Length: 129
Image (cartoon, rainbow, N blue to C red; front, side, top):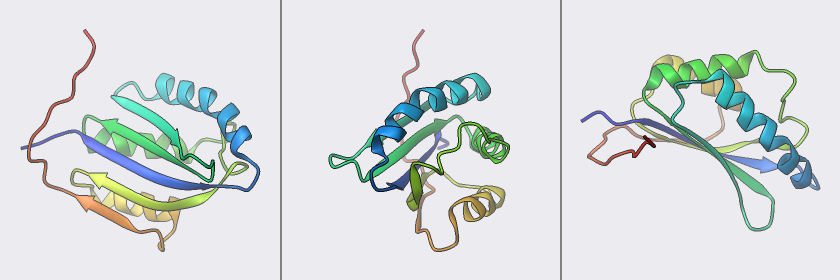
């Protein structure tokens, strides 16, 4: 059974930079919304003490996520490097392509743990009418 491709990445916030990250997010989300029309969902969450954030992305398929990674590769003005130190963990729900794994390794580094849940057993995604 094929389901959506879901990507969750945990990122460490640079010390004293959570307010900057909070200010950056609305423009970041709008950029993703405007440039990635197939993305079903894109959310960023902050932990209680402001030391970590997580991106939660829902894509209809791997092609949509690959497009996301290509868009990010060309991104300069909305860079998160001033506020985020780096990715500490990645979880993938769905079967990533080799291209996705290569792009993630290049973007996050080879030492970041990646957990993959390739088999979708069931579920649904409710979209607004």
